Length: 243
Image: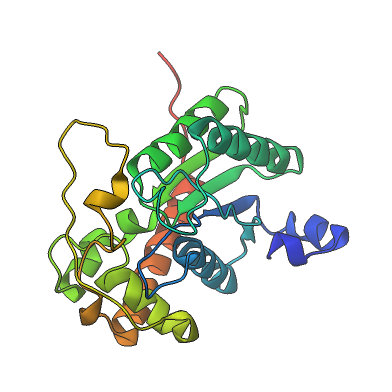
């Protein structure tokens, strides 16, 4: 049940089947010379849509922007302020809650630390406001890290490298271009820098040459399976009484 594709009547009928909604959150940011700017968004959207084919869940319209600090100077990156992303997610969840949804899974395809801390902060702010809501905030990386580590050859692969190039080769090979490079940037510890491109000119963190469509398909399957287990856990979760 992809919300933007439903009629009002479809939505109402969907509420008789589930009160669970997936909210895919991505980013529009540089992913080297070889991957599309929407890589993070595509990954989250695809996983949510695939789970919706398996079980009754709503999928909210995706958030295609994120907080992208380390890639903020790469061509095409469109980054939000943390307060903007936080307010946006709060507004979306409150609107979905008013429409009768109660179980919210925020799935981020973007693994930026500040970005995901912002999503968690929004979720914590929503908890006292929406007494019947159950909320989970998770990244694709968190869902696949343990089971998927045996598939990945690159140590420390994290951005536009083996993992993400594999995902795009599996689902959108027509958007994957030549020009992939292996890179492992180093930023100064604890020191904020203005010229981020000096430290990370390629936009790659890993080795995309080791990518394959087969790996991408296996990784996506792992993420979908893990997301389904999380949905079941959230739906069955009972908050213990306070002290």
